[in-house]
Length: 61
Image (cartoon, rainbow, N blue to C red; front, side, top):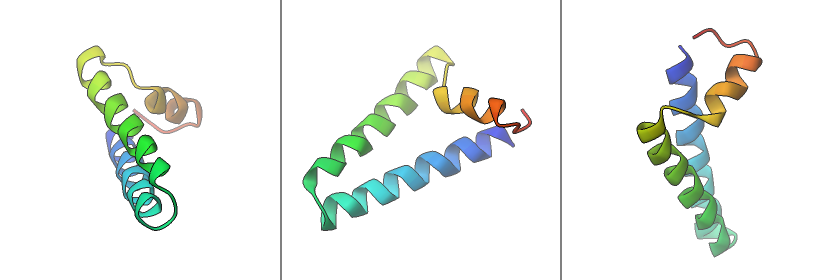
């Protein structure tokens, strides 16, 4: 269940930031890059800040 939330949040962040980058300001693409870089680093380190936040909010692992 936790992985579903993480994927949904990451996907939402990417979609929203791409749309904001296209229609509002190009600097929003930096946020897209940030989300992608965090996903990549978590695949190597097995550490994800969003996972820690969701666990503290009570999402079951």
